[in-house]
Length: 384
Image (cartoon, rainbow, N blue to C red; front, side, top):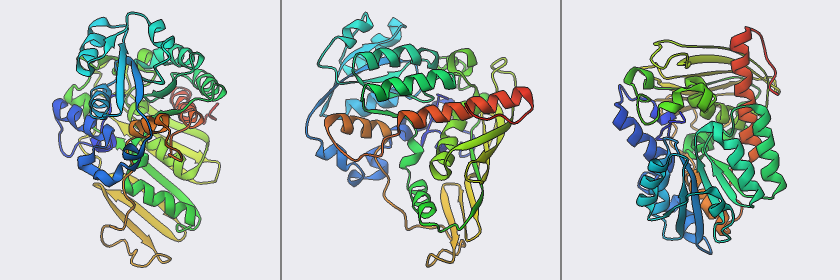
């Protein structure tokens, strides 16, 4: 979805039962931002400690997360959004008004303005490549909504340009900031699971059933513009978590399909089998035609097991006191600031933030592209 959502954005977009389109967008916004109300002031240490103010520009306002990002930046006294640009002038004017920013008639105004230290790119995905390369040439740090690009090749080109220019980068993989996932990252690193044998990620909601993409966000259900449909839109978040925990994917087999036909040939559900280079077997489920999604993650190993069920973590491991798996595990790390907060803090000078790298963003596109190729060819495909 680029339409996504949250408590954790999307995943938390998992409809608790049947989420209305209005509630979905509202939830998504809140999650994407990971508000202080949800995680507490102490979860935003970098916001409080940043040494200087930041001047930014919005480059594209098409993404469903744009409203939440506008709200996030508008509430930060250390951030000034000087410009808003969008190829859709009416859309750009609306966001510029909300931010009390200037509407840029041409992108050159932004690229040439030395006051602008970074840009937030929330355009349609098929515009990312040109915008990112231009931003890199202009030496502007950038937060780019996911997915990074339409194809593995163009995503790799963007990643290389960002790295060559030495720029700060991040993207919207907000699930990495959530306590359950942070805890599991720690336990995987400690070896608490023993030899991990399989993992299952699922990120599904009822967007097609509820017509969430019928109007303003319709482009997100057009693979020619978005690059993917439901499987890639929601699946990229769970894929990021799986790769963050388990490493690179060696090969993919997938089945991805249309269900209701509400959005033409746009896929609405899918399932992929992943062979990780580490030897772990993984599965990834994502779709817009699910009325429930109770189990969002499962990890199984020779010495441990974990499952996130209805946003509660159940953890079994003899190495960890009390980890019987019978009751929800409550000893969790504190949530981290949302990815956009982290990006702004990094641009302002904060160090040591766990930003998503350009190469990581590119790798997720590569694996997802392989999944779609597999669905068409009915064969295993190696990511580019």
